[in-house]
Length: 141
Image 1 (cartoon, rainbow, N blue to C red):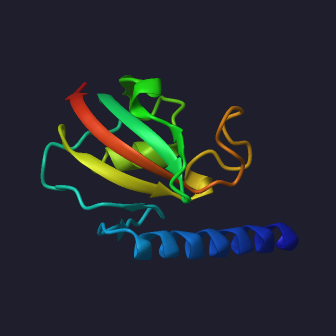
Image 2: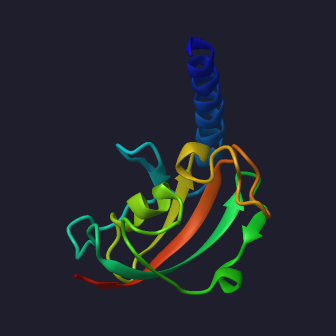
Image 3: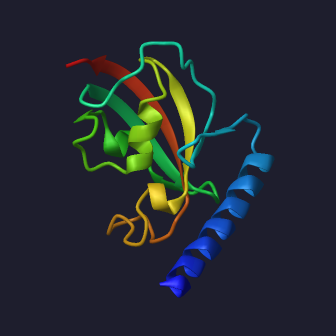
């Protein structure tokens, strides 16, 4: 068990170092959230979605080397109920920090993205991902 914890600490440290290098080289301001991911600032005083709300959003995703993995057109608009979807938990956390119409860049460590398994297609295991996220609409329940 202790060995497993050490492996996870090492992975987290390595990912955090890569994320800090990426942020340093970008011309954007990122904030670190309490949930352990980074995103560009959003208006937290706006109409924010809550657990159970249905949201419509779009995103594209790239790796830290700026290689596009999926673009917005490939994915299209998605409609989900927060708390009951299969999207990475880090994306749900980010959506809850956005108002309709806002766009944000979101950096997810692998543990908040696709973790050990990747997506089985283009996203590798243990890959830090950068999402370009746009919240289009909220339908409160």
